[in-house]
Image 1 (cartoon, chains in turn cyan, red):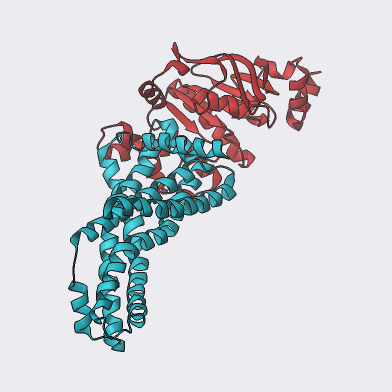
Image 2 (cartoon, chains in turn orange, red):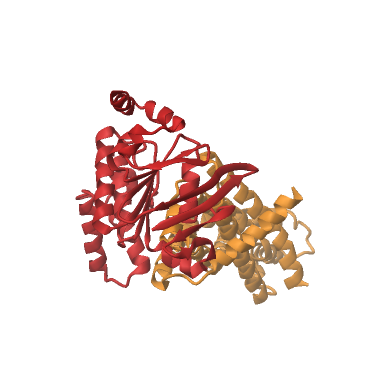
Length: 248
Length: 251
């Protein structure tokens, strides 16, 4: 099992070497990158938005219910919601959701192409299949995922505001004061960086699993499941490492 | 011309190909035949470089396949056209985009020139008015034809076909065989066809290699095959009614 693990890690890095070879034609690469942006990023906007709005609302209620102490100013609800969203929820939680959506999409698409010999056909034409199929996915997921994070952050705050306005749990003025309290722009950069890293892991690991899928449709299903599990574990591991490195 | 010298290939300790030595001539339909599991596909995959032989060498002209650099292999692959068993058309592309795919990568033609060439190839294989269809909208025979059109898009020097008739009705099979044979002569390609279809063997087999349990047991052509003394080949041929009748008639 340990041998298999190290073999897989080695193969993953060799795969990345193949992915990051210079594209045969930049025009084709950019065209693919635009298509992948639509498929991976734009199509994730709705799910990310809906989840962010609701989580923002829930965070407000939970935080307010835990700050019953009269000494603590109610504006801290807004402050804590903002910090929770920017530090953890908008990057890590959204990345875990994307590991399911984006990861299964990539692994099953590439896995199906592998088992139907489409990848072999490309290779035999002299095209680098990893470069053509995977590089645009990795680039668009890594470069544009911070946009999803920023959108999630904004919508989370809006969701919180909506709950505050609707329930009167705290005043909107207190909520807005809390949002502006002790604002640290570095946290936004930290969260964007984490999101980029996580989306790089999701796209490359899922593509790797799909690329080496074998055993027919069952193999495609297995590669899809495996990519979600491995991506999720690595997201949590790298969350810990990056947080330690960047915040301490 | 492709030359194969003493190649061996095994998986997990089981030897699948044993000491295969042969050559495939230009302008001819070279057939690799044998029962299922005999090692035909493994031999074909070794020939096209999807697998590497454990021992032995494959030569394209005078160039040793195993000694080629990445760029040399890439250049060679641009001279190779392949028809896969399942056609392997790209799901994300329409018929015409599939045929234009190799042109997009390896030519500097304008879009109009690529379309013209793709239409020429599609007409050559009798696929007309299907440019904007996706592979899943085509019948098995049509998919094979589009696969052939894509394979010949860049005027290849080598054409490899893996079970071109599998899953096709006898009439369509004959049309595909005739097409492969015509294109081989027309473009002077070195064509290697992997099949166990007796009609194909008797119809277009200019040179035939019979593989049995990983060993090359017999080489010849479509006329000499019916009078073979090779016991295993006779058994293989007699499993087909047409061939059996011809062989017994000859006796």
